[in-house]
Image (tube, rainbow, N blue to C red):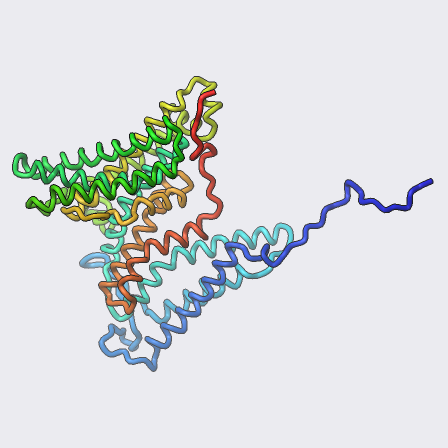
Amino acid sequence: MVSATTTARADAPIIETKTWRDSITRPRIFSVFFILIGLWMVLSVTSNYGADADLSGLDVNEAGRVITTLTFNATQSLTIDTVTYATVVGIVFYILGGVVGLLPRPAGELGQRLDRVTKYWLFVNGILFIPTIMIIAAAGNSTNFTVLLQTSMRLATPIVIGALSGIWAERSGVVNIAIEGMMLTGAGVGFVVFTLVAGTVPTSTGLWLGVLAAVLSGGFMAALHAWLSITFRTDQIVSGTVINIMALGLTSFLRRQVLLSSEAGRETLQQIRIPVLADIPILGEIFFNGKPIFYAMFILLIATHIILFYTRWGLRTRAVGENPHAADTLGINVLRNRWINVLISGLIAGLGGAWFSLETNGSFEDGMTSGRGFIGLAAMIFGKWMPFGAFGGGVLFGFSDALGLRFQILNVNIPEQFLQMTPFVVTMVVLAGLVGKATPPKADGIPYEKE
C-alpha cells in the first residue's frame, strides 16, 4: 500500500526568499549619497551664484557669470564657469548616475552589464567628488591646483610609508597596529638625537644622524612587538596597543627631559631638486622638487613590490602569511621569516616618523603623528595589502588632508574642527563603502606554534 503522506523531493529546487535588507547594497547606498550630493550642488550653487545672487567681490566672466580659476604655474591656468560646471556634473554624473544605481536589475546578461556600468559610473563620481568640491569652494576666486597636488603628495608621504610598513608585517602573518607608536618613537628619538649632536657636527650631518636614530628606534619597537607576538605568542593586537601607549609615554618623557631644557633648532632636511626632471611643467614641481624622505617613499614602494612578488624572499613571506604550516614543511623557518619582516616593518615606520620632526616641522611635539599610522593601516586595507594599491589609498587620504587646508585658505564657511576631521572622515567612508571585501593573508594575526 502506498502511503498518502506527501514528502518533499530531495532534488526539488530551493527557492530563496529575498528580504528588504538584501536590496540595501553598497552601490545603492552610494547611489543615494551621490543623488543627495548632486541635488545639493545644483541648488546651492544656483542660489549662491545664480543670476539673482549678489556677485560683488567675486571674479566673473564677460557674461557676468561667476568663475573659478585653477592656476597650474605662472603661465598656465584654467577658467571654469562655476554654475554651469556644478549643474552639468551634478545632474549628468551624480543625480543620473545615482538613479541608474537604484534601478532594479533584470536577470541575465543585461543585469550584469548594468551592474558594470553602475560600478564605473559611481567610481567616476568618486574621482570627481574632491575636485568638484574644490571648484565650488573656490567659486569667484583662484586657487593653485599644482600647489594643492604638491601638498597632497607631501602629506601622503607618512601615510604611504606607514602602509608599506604594515604590508611587510602583515604579509608574513603578523598584525602590526603599532605603526603609530613606531612612527611616534622615530619622530621623538630622531629629533632628540639631532638636538644632542647639534653644535658638535654640521647641521646636515646631525639631521642624517637623527634620521638614522629614528629608523633604528622604530626597529627597536618592532623587535619588542616581534618578541611579544612571535616568540611568546601574545595577542598581536594587545602587543601593538602596548607599544602605542609606551611610545606616547617615552616620547613625552624625552621631550620634557631633553628638548624643553635645550635650544632645539628648527632646521629640516634640505630640498633636493632633480635636474631636468624638475623642469617638467606641473609634474616636475610635484614629484621632482621634494625632500629626501619624500623620495624614499617611492624607492620603498618600488622595492617592496619587487621584493614581495619577484624574489624568493617575497615568495616565502607570502607563503608564511597564507599557510605557515605548509611553509614549514617545505623547510621555511616561519618564526625567523616573521621576525625579519616585522623588523623591516619597524625600520620603515621609524623613517616615516622622521618625516614629521626632521623633514617637515623641525621640532617635536607630543603625539605629533596625529593618528597617521592608523590611517596608513587604512590605506593598506584600501589597497588590499598590495604596495601600489596602498600608495593609491595614501594619496587619497593625503589629498583629503590637503583639501581641508585649502578650505581654510579660501575661508570656506566651515568650522576649523570639521576641516581637521576631513582625513579621518574619508578613512571611515573608504573603509565602510569603497573598499568592499578586503581579505587579509589567511594566517594574519594567528600566532604560529611549530608542531
